[in-house]
Image (cartoon, rainbow, N blue to C red):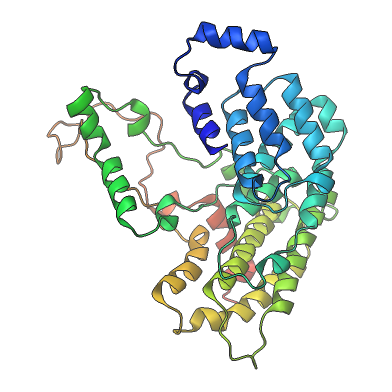
Length: 393
């Protein structure tokens, strides 16, 4: 499935390299379907299998993003998956599961027939059955999801536009070995090798990076908490209740002060991911004009109080402390790490190329990366929340 996902991203002709496009179309006409329909059907049938759920959801998400699953048959399959998710759904909200469900919920919300069936409620019911406490007991390894995955899924199911949240980067999860060092070196020198060996210049896409912050993020910041509704609506209220109950369960299951055993860094990181996801969802609701009760805030404060001794302990190893404290990365203003690459064409600059830049970039807003105006809108909302800004624990 991972191989099919890669082939879908680079083009469907790569499935049969020895065949031409005419051969592929003839093969598809004889079968009455395209080759990618079989991949889609195989992936959607394996969503509920624990050993294959993560790879199957990744494959289905790639097919959706590449436009290879956009026919009425695929939309019908999405309806079947979402309608039966509480009975035959994925066993765990992995990162790829959250990505696939976000895409499926968006498609269902934009389709008139699927919108009337309220499939969002089915996904919310499936998510509320998940217990992070049961999954974390007796495990000394991280689960395959991040705070950003849970946050985006809860927002999509609630019908709220999620803000940009810093997610895991490849450098954070790569092991320290010779193979990784070799691949990183090849990635850094790839433009230079392409020029020397194949006489190819880097594509424009490789040189320009675009911001992932949604355009609607700035409109949500302006005096969002000054407006209130008649209480939290049904789906946002269920999502907020789910996050609150999850943090309360983590606090209840946390070792007491009499227990001398130190909590492992993996367990602390899992709890902090839920705290970060709940904080982000809470301020997103407030920015959208929804008045929420302080129950979720109290649960966050109580859980952080339980975790604080483990965070302050110096008994953990350096990698363990790094694992715990990087959970707060979505709340910091640190810019993302971008490894240096061998430049082929230097940008216009008196310091580098000696050429004065005459034409200005019309796409940017003039902000300097890392400056005070480049802080993520989500970070502004979280640190502007009264409970956080007055310095309470």
